Length: 205
Image (cartoon, one colour):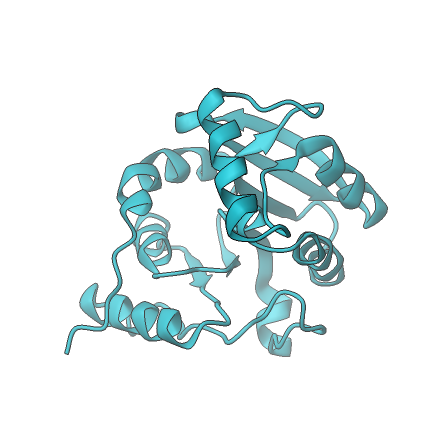
């Protein structure tokens, strides 16, 4: 049985995300992707950036099964490690010592708005523990700017999210920046993306 999952948003945004990531990813070493979902992004980026080891992770068992299926489907078993069972709020993160030694960048796509604020805080706390000086944490997704939505569609999306779960919602970039600063990471770059999303890179000081 084919256990691959297909998320429509991935096919729409992976090319533009890859283009933006290419400005920040290291020439070698490992990248940890938090909340990898179906795995479609992970296998695409592993193929596009072959000199990096792309480590996916997700706490959802069915998503990890999908990631494994995508790795096999793309013939990446020899290159790409199996996904890690990682819950961003469960600290410390279960990262092997050898992987921590090679870790250069952490990437998190479309998680902040569909998780509690505690997940955002844990993401920065643990990223600060694992990243070395000048390494990056890179986020992608919708954000508010100074308390205002960047589009009517994002405002409606935010309302829909909060209806589903009051702990969810489009985060304000200023509040995210504050959490970053308190954990020794500085807003390094902001790139406007398609569909009123942003890619934001934070550098470990």
